[in-house]
View 1 (cartoon, rainbow, N blue to C red):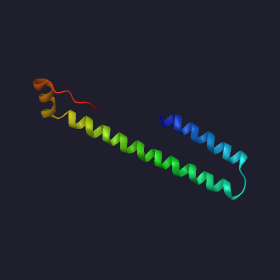
View 2: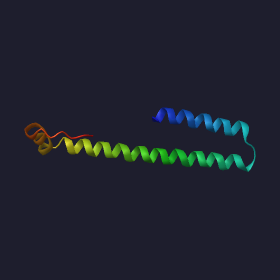
View 3: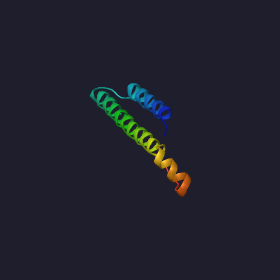
View 4: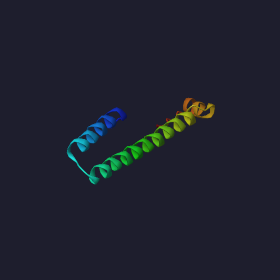
Length: 76
């Protein structure tokens, strides 16, 4: 699920909670949605960092020479 899809689903869920839940349960549910969004964003940041690190490692001069001379294919 990409970020835009997740945010759209989150907005819809929050609207459903606002329109259909009353009392203390509403705040608890909205808090859970907020926690879920925070966790999803943290996972996305970790994945993005790992991809950037992997790309940087593959772009070092040594990695490029190994790929060219030895034919070692690195997988992202």
